[in-house]
Length: 134
Length: 130
Length: 102
Image (cartoon, rainbow over all chains, first blue to last red; front, top):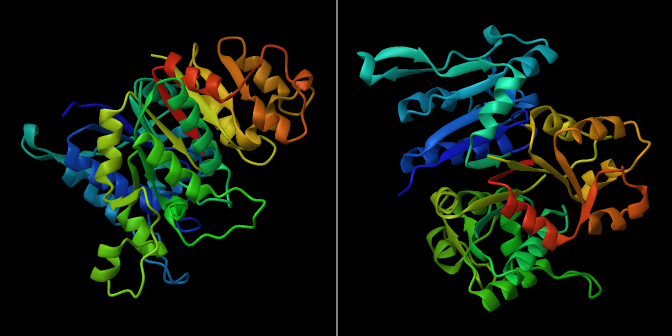
């Protein structure tokens, strides 16, 4: 099967709506198709990968740990927009530590999160062949 | 051109299914191919046959069903989203031990892989949602 | 590679439209559908943003959505083009990819 550049765009906070959770389910399935997959976290989407999520008070399952599994499926291009973080008073330190092991580099642990500014994000979007937004 | 359409909202609640229907009709009229329509999130509710809107309203589920019949469309309801929301075909209802199924003719239930495969096969993938 | 950006949110209610304008590249096209159609009208709080986008992008509005919201085509910003569903299809052909700003 052909390889295409797929981007999943996340712009919504988790839990208030189901989009973040069901988006993650799509991303995990996409790993089986050996496509060139990347994820964009912009606007409220950055809250999806915030650290310290605790859902005990709302009666929903905390699915944030699943993002940590993405690296095992070689989904390691998680683009986070700098301006979206700044607008929300957040920094990279507020996000989970998401990594992957590079088997071509002696299994060195490398960061999956790539902080990019808005102009770079626009450039990355412009290169995609299939953009699925949630 | 070959299209895959993704529909993420239920009928009546949001305009996205109406828009996608109009888009699909216009594309088919121009001789394009709809490779697949994938229903996700509350969009799975577009596939129920147990909808009974007032007589003067449109019948969105039926319109999809009829369009599928006319043009041999592949309308796919995501199984994971459908299970959460109570959309069942006969096989799935049996497997889940449910007393009824409710899927309308022309739709089928399958996995999320169908969306990715649709994105790979189609020239254009369009998302309709909220 | 040119992209068709499809927006369906009113710019007066949500940031999706603004976010779309912030991420669209020169040479891209933007199509306003559903509630976003209200953003095509001139002399609004948002119209300057559209006028700025028109400098290096093409901007369209789905005519059915405009009319449904009580807006006639003579109200739309100069340079914005009204299209029907057939025109919507043509825009997806003319651009290499599409992105929906939900």
